[in-house]
Image (cartoon, rainbow, N blue to C red; front, top):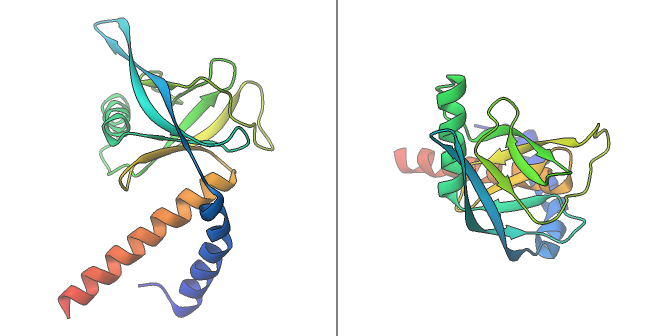
Length: 167
């Protein structure tokens, strides 16, 4: 369980981001989910949630996040539960993929804002695979920080509820 000081810090950080949450809106959009089937690229259209042009995130359906997680686990041999998967956003082609595993990809219709320190055509990103919708965020963005805080808060609540259920 977290110490009082770290709980206070988490609450303070979360309250700072509450403004972001209140202003955060996203819109339904279409994206291409591209897989490889017997060596052939297989695109399929899917619904996503995407923010305003200055925001650096998209929401995808859990089945897509789970497919990416499964492909990464199979192709890299990672067996741990992956709740945060490092990915890369390619600005010119406007798609997310894992750094080592090129497929599956999520291709969107707009570029996302480059974050400070971005080199070349790619930005480091994270796939968050917990909660109702999975998120892809550019590392270092406010949206990345928000996803980390909101998902950690959810884990804290889960831990607290489990502890209370044992008492």
